[in-house]
Image (tube, rainbow, N blue to C red; front, side, top):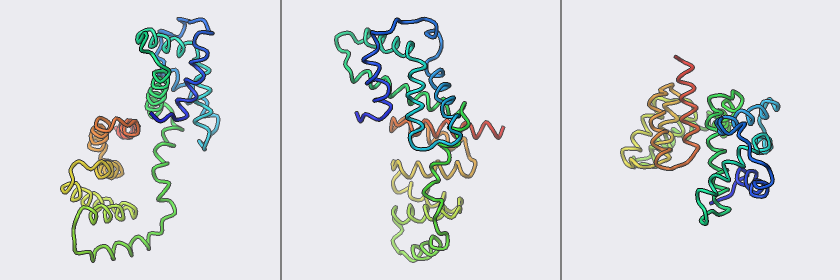
Length: 231
């Protein structure tokens, strides 16, 4: 498993301190995920705008705020595994905790929600729409209407905000390769942009199940919040 900053922050430190602090039942009855998400959001809100390094720094803050209960959970897991417990299990626990907390924050932390929702569009900010339209004219002269053709044209439509044609082309591409993850992702995103939140949610959910990647849990939470805000 690749050890991200979440791994390093949580368990390079926790493995060392787990036996140095007395366990406490004060927070043990509460939900660790929610506590962690709340403290992480509190720290991020001090920044007003999330930039590189803020999330890592605030992860450290949330860890320190919840040291006792995190220690207890780590120890419980170690006792459960017994002789089979390894340092890697600690890293896995920390990684999963961080992932769950960020999903909770989509619904509870405005700053983080807007950050996650907006960073997807960063690559499109400085695109020249005239150039994109020229590319569309060129690609429309292509004779072979294969998957590559439809996905390329769909993206061009997506980039110039022609959602109807983008969705149509992505669906044509999907007919040629129904299990392509990227195509399914782009269909969900296009539906989301068109405010078809229920349909987008179901696709993100399927992708989360198939891929086991937390990014799709974040996207599920994002469209759920958008859908609820329109009701």
